[in-house]
Image 1 (tube, rainbow, N blue to C red):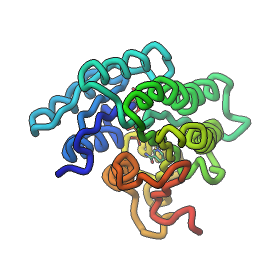
Image 2: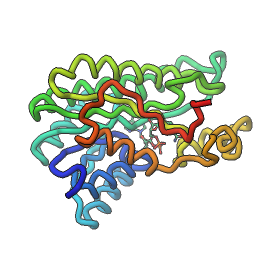
Image 3: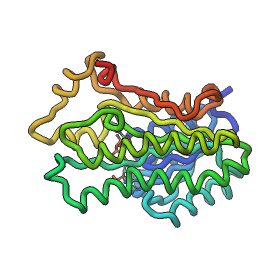
Length: 251
Ligand code: NDP
């Protein structure tokens, strides 16, 4: 018995990093998985790898800033697998900059992907979750959505928006058994954090020093949290925040 047996899940930004780990874990727990990303080659490879292991997955091209792309991605899930139960709004981008160093272009690009993308995905998924009799939406925020950061203004603002958008969704749709929760990862070993570490004022060592558990997180550390929120094991949770950060925001 898999923890996701019978469920259909759509994961944005699922071609690599945390999203790909979630796709693999969901499929190994019995879900049918739709992977959406801009990275077509990588996304198709993840879907093929899941299929080789006996899982059920497909890839769709999805730019989370496009309402049309979201509609097609949700339609693809329903036409291929019959319904949609779970949405993971995982796609995200990061750019460096204190307030004065942040250009309007950087600001808009980050809000478009990290904040508007989550809104558009949720908006597209809700009607199908209603048809399915309920659902679970997991929005990947960040510890940067809980506390201010020294070097990423627009990113922090976007992740704060995700945190409260999640709570608005939760209270609006609880009556229809559609749940929404946010996850707040600390530093996780993916391409994104390597971009962060390229700055002269940050490094792997500095991230580890700020983390009580004394290490950087892995993609599986997050994927298991996402799995819990996606499965019926968390059926009494909505509008909640799951912090997976090695203790860094507990200080
Ligand atoms: P990655 O950069 O490895 O993965 C992000 C994925 O999202 C990439 O495949 C990326 O593709 C995709 N993506 C970016 N823009 C879009 C778009 N417009 N439409 C569709 N897909 C897009 O990073 P992570 O796996 O670490 O990030 C996953 C989530 O976790 C993000 O929301 C991130 O903000 C969050 N997070 C990450 C932390 C970390 O330390 N890594 C810490 C806290 C939160 P492409 O390469 O084409 O941009």
